[in-house]
Length: 205
Image 1 (cartoon, one colour):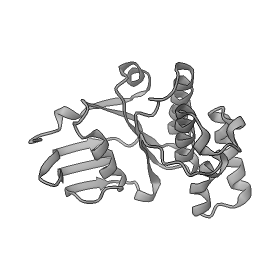
Image 2 (tube, rainbow, N blue to C red):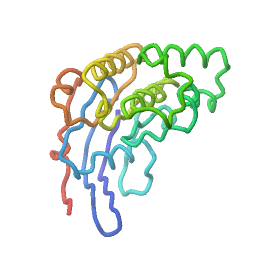
Image 3 (cartoon, rainbow, N blue to C red):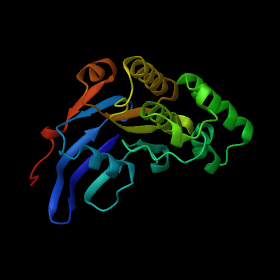
Image 4 (cartoon, one colour):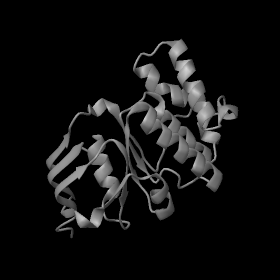
């Protein structure tokens, strides 16, 4: 469970988030919905620990920060092969080579991108890059995945595939997903609960 108390985030003199209290379930799938500029991505950066400069409290109950991952709209892929990108989180966690290969091969198959394994990530399409970014995020079996518009670059078939993989992941790994989405149909298909961010924001300039 994520519990937020008296959270204030500002950039310079501009206050972009002011949330008195919010509780987010970290089991299953939670969708966060809101207009552009409301602070959704900033909120996710704070929850993930990428952004640490804020006032108030973000309590991550039952979840270690190292078990949280955030797939942003800028995918930040390494200029290496797809295989190396997906395996990178496993290597820094010192998984052995056999375990790494098994996990990466599984994810390549899940996302139907086996044919891209040896391709340099810099040569991928935006849709291919998005699949690789999600696969990399799932590689080390995190307990909480934060997703910012996870299928924005995917066609309908790939969107349904990604949704299926992500939903299955939460069940198999007893993990949670919190995702930003403007796609109401996607939210209806995937989300166990939906948070309207405007209901929690106060005092935003």
